[in-house]
Image 1: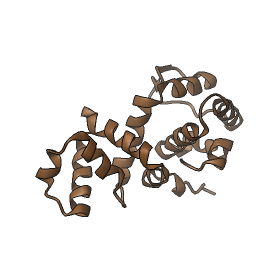
Image 2: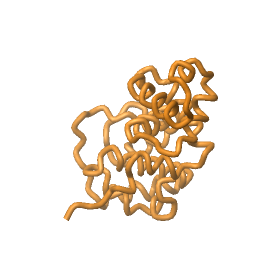
Image 3: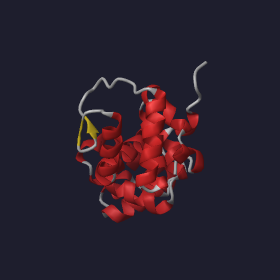
Image 4: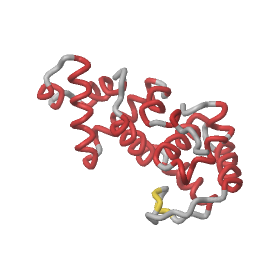
Length: 171
């Protein structure tokens, strides 16, 4: 029977984040040049919600666009997924690297080198997760694990049982 990972949809993870972290992630999102497609989608979502013209939104300063994005009541999954990944790449590389090191997965500063990562053994994955939760803030670990699961539940699904996620679901 297939696992239900609906709690790990990017938009649900985003909604459970505190507002300060959402604003931080939104700022990173707006500064990422490779997120142009998702930025257009975000502008469209903000414009629809706030009844603004898209042209007006494109010209707003970064901090206002970040606050508007962080406060959207309905976040598109594609935008949330991109913002979560960007946030981790910009703010959480040491934690990402430590986790991948403990699993023996080759990476460059927390970014996995290989497109075809072999799924780690569930017990090894849980042990690495528990170890990471001892070294980094539990909220950061839970958010990272939730993001991994949202990106690839087949590879990272065993992390759903992690103590970090159990006590702080996708925060």
